[in-house]
Structure formats: C-alpha cells, structure tokens
Image 1 (cartoon, protein in one colour):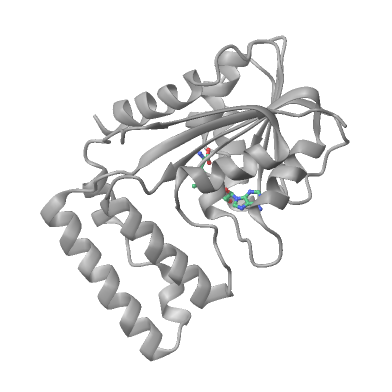
Image 2: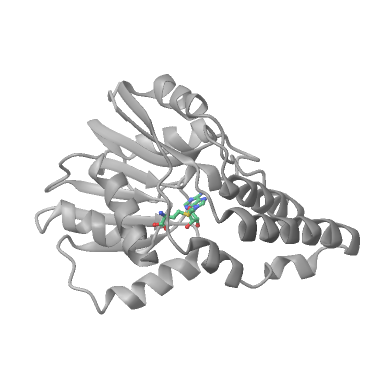
Length: 248
Ligand SMILES: C[S@@+](CC[C@H](N)C(=O)[O-])C[C@H]1O[C@@H](n2cnc3c(N)ncnc32)[C@H](O)[C@@H]1O
C-alpha cells in the first residue's frame, strides 16, 4: 500500500506536466528512481533526461539501481548544484523539480536566483515547472520539515527555503517567466508513511551538536513522534507551478 500510494502521488504530480514526449528534460534537485522512471517513461526513447542532485550519495545509489532497469529515455545522472548548473545555455526544453525548493539552502543565494539559474539552461520558449509542498492546510509533515530545517541550521548554518505559501513560490515564477499557471492540490495521503517515519533512527547529525541544543531538538523529535502516533503522518497540500522562458 505504501509503495502504491507513493507511485500514485508521483503519477499525479508528473501528469500535471502534460505531454513531455521527445523533450530534453532536466530533473532539477532529485535523483530518486521513482521520479526518474516516471519522467523517462513519459519522455520516451526520442527524448533525454538529465537528473541533477547536490547529494552525491543519492546519485550513486540511483546509478547502481539504474543498471537493473531498462528505461525509455536515456538517463544521465549528474552531481551538482542547481545554483550553478553544469550545462551550456539553452540546453533543455524543460526543467522540472519536485520537492526541491523547500530544501534549497538560501543562505547565500535566493530561491529566485535558483529559478534564474534553471532558466539559463532552458531554450527560449522552454518551460520551468515545479511541484512542492505548501502550508495551506495543517499537517504533521509540516512540523517534521520545520524540525529538519532547524536541525540543518544548527548543524551547518544552512538556511533552508522551507515550506511556505503557494503565493511565495508563484511570485518567483511571475517575476521571471511568462504564461505562468499554478494550482494548489489537496494532500495525497500515503498509507503507512507514519510507520516508516517512526521506524527511522534518530538523525545522526544530532550527536554532533552541543548538549543543550541536542537535548532541545531531541525533545522536539520525541514530541513529533508522539504526534505521529496520535494523528498519523498527515501530509501537506502541494503546489504545481509552471512558466515559460522568453529568451530576452
Ligand atoms: C526532498 S528531495 C526531492 C526528492 C525528489 N523528488 C527526488 O526525486 O529525489 C530534495 C532534493 O533536492 C536536492 N537539492 C537540494 N539543494 C540542491 C541544490 N542546490 N542543487 C541540487 N540539488 C539540490 C537534495 O539533495 C535532495 O535530493
């Protein structure tokens, strides 16, 4: 049921792209096989898919798994930063991200800079699209994400963009792109996700923090676990937004 619901969620998000057949697509800030398989299947053998992820460990894990799959569109996995995409200008027809923006570290550069960097590798007339969570309905996952954000701040001084309103992300799109369309979707429950989260170990990074901070965050993680036991792991609404690059 867990896998079925994850696939259904991924399919719902990817279907929002409409036809992407034969396109040269950049999957920005992600490398999970589920999304790569869904994109590759929709692109087909005449297109190409490039996945760019900052996390080299995730890239390597997916590279190993990819060997066992026969995907429709050829897939290239690239370790790198979307703020400095390692591609020539005008390389892709579409840049798509799913769940990237809330994990962006915007300490030195803004989320708008990230969008502009993606735009620089899209051909004139090409499209940028994203799916990400928004805070329009209460959800246990929002508390979890906020806690992860605080942990990242304590561990590495990162300032994650986090999950905010749909309007905040849409404003970035409207400042840079034309023909912007967007819509907020109701949360898609994933059965047993709560059990999966509860089975996870305490974040490793906690042990590297000063005792007081560690105690404070540990108390919050424990409170979150109790909330998951009571309410289940309720999910946030998501935003789909897209717009087109003008080329000027
Ligand atoms: C919530 S996950 C997205 C999951 C995604 N649906 C997938 O297929 O992996 C966010 C991803 O964004 C990546 N990421 C965060 N900041 C990035 C950056 N500046 N450049 C490239 N990838 C980044 C993280 O490494 C992580 O894999």
